[in-house]
Structure formats: structure tokens, C-alpha cells
Image 1 (cartoon, rainbow, N blue to C red):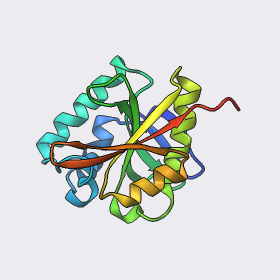
Image 2 (spheres, rainbow, N blue to C red; image 1 turned 120 degrees about the horizontal axis):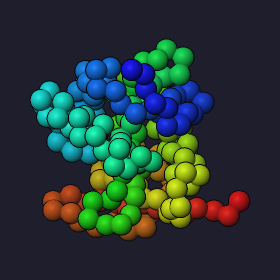
Image 3 (cartoon, helix red, strand yellow; image 1 turned 45 degrees about the horizontal axis):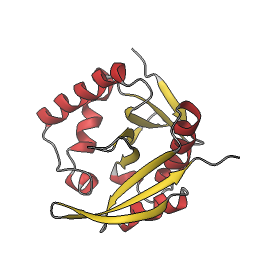
Length: 172
């Protein structure tokens, strides 16, 4: 079984996860405390396996949304994941990403966010998308700003201080 492509950027292919192909890469990403420290607690191998099965099952429920694998277009190497998912407890939707450490600082996150925005506004009826970061995650805030998001507000969720960014669909 091959990956179903969601969208492509200049250097990357964003596609649905395929369990047998992606289970190990998914663990490498979601089991790494440094990679996911601003997203969620790192997961064990068993937790990653269960989470990946949920993600794949969700493709049928929400065909245009999801968490997807990101692969290098030339080498086919797995570099991380990209998400277009609901903001928990709201009617809003958000974009997010996580990259393996060796791919940090190469512009991939900004490239993903810019194309992800185009994907959402071209494929859905949404007029706005959110990006949410921890206040301490300055690098991701810079990515959101470079991709065209603007800071809307900061707020507390439990012990975490979060920054909520938004981008609106333009008429051009």
C-alpha cells in the first residue's frame, strides 16, 4: 500500500500515514521528548502505535483533515508530521507540525505552513485557521509569523501559557 498524497511543497510531500510503512518513524518523532516538548508529553512505543491507529482511522471520519506524514520529495526520507486538526473544545481548526531534530533550521516548517494554509483555503470552506504555541516556543511563533499568521491573544491552559495565532482567507 502506498501513501495517499495530501499536498506537496517545493521540497516535501505531505501524505496520509500508512501503518506498516510509518509505525517506526511515528515512534521516532512522537517518542522524542525534545521534538514534542511543546506539543504533548512524549509517548511510549505502545502509545505511539495506538495513536497512529487512531489517526489512520480518523481519515475516514474527516477526509480533508488529519495528521499526516511529511517526506522529503527527492530522498523519500520521513522528516516529520503535519496536522490540520480541530482546536480541542472549539469549532475552530488549527495547523501544526513536528519535525525530526535533524531537519530543524532548514525552512521546512515555514514551507509546510505556507502550503498547508493554501491547502485548507482551497479544499475547505474555512475563512480562518489557527496556530497555537506555548509562549516559550519562540521558534514556532516565528514560523507562524513568516507564514502570515498574526498573534491574536495569549492565555493560560492549566500551567501552560499559550499564544493563539490566526490567519484569515484573503480575497486575492
